[in-house]
Image 1 (cartoon, rainbow, N blue to C red):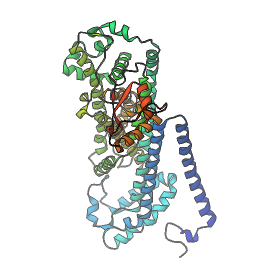
Image 2 (tube, helix red, strand yellow; image 1 turned 90 degrees about the vertical axis):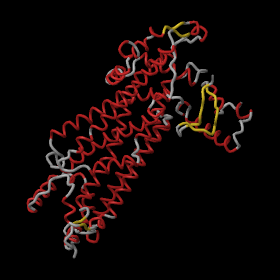
Image 3 (cartoon, one colour; image 1 turned 30 degrees about the vertical axis):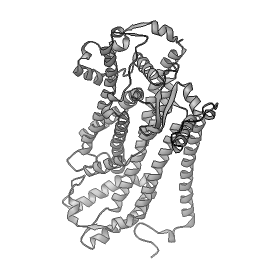
Image 4 (cartoon, helix red, strand yellow; image 1 turned 180 degrees about the vertical axis):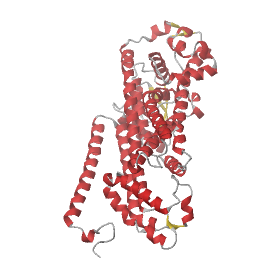
Length: 502
């Protein structure tokens, strides 16, 4: 047979110019995409954006994972479609109500198949996966049903693609808009750095705690009551989550606790570098997030409206994170207000891990990671269903459930970008230790190398020739007012333990 089946001719009877043309187009598109990522990486390295470059590498890893999944689906499509199960098993836990009349069901499926725009958008993938369509006939001859049909396998393939792309895109959008919000704080930092600082004059100044703008805005009046303090924190995240007084006070608290020897320390630059380093963790899809995907797909049963209820998870988590971050600022103000009536010099808060959940500031980053992924999952599911099955398909659900899902998704994306992420960027620095982003990338490499050598030499102190070297990490650390204490210990798995000079 020259035909090679109902799906058309095989490669044995396909013109070579057609095969060469299709391969040329596919290879050209793939090479063009790879060149774009390569040029973007070189640009980031040229601009000394090492953290964003690492985030780009993380995106490449996700694309590689996506390609591997596509390869696995393509290679094992025939075997998967020929795995047979009893027909009765296919009548339970369905996303759509199964028609009793097989003829009506076939007509409905054919109509959905005709309306699907996937035939236009993904013709090559559809043709590739359709080769396993004989699985239904293979299992039908045994009186059974295929575990997963070629059409369902094809739809699943597209879903994984849309999910990966949506997560990367929405994470990047969140960082972009959050960065634009944080940039508004730059002029506060510049004004502080331009201001002359006289330590002796500062000590002669007496600051009345209750009259300080930071205390009045955060811990005064009804907000002194714990319950009202939490309520104030909840509503504060929606408007002016970080004021100038907040930024100035939190910045001074960080500088005085971590780099007292350098009052002109550029806190804004450090904070943005730390946020960029955290972004590379957010953009990836961890194993536990894939577990969430499998669980959500399992719960998509007809009549349960699971995706509608799931959409409230990222919203609830985001509101909880925003409230907690705002309340940490109130706790910092409360500590000062309850211990002092007046202080010498400027008002200084005391950063501490005790203010964070389970004394772990990094836990907030994990929650933000989950929030962004779940929100991207919700939007990706909607896009996938719309493109694959159409808006009026049964799997899409009722409009009364779809519209609230979209509204919640947009709201979560907006709130996370303009409020929660900037709030996290500054409050995350109020822990007991600090991020290794406080050093430049080449200094970080030098510190890590020094720490390893010191550990291998039995924790011996570096000799004078190292500490006096013009470009040594020790000298650069002293320039920012920081002293190395224990080279073998790492804080939160990111940097050697570094304590402030007292």
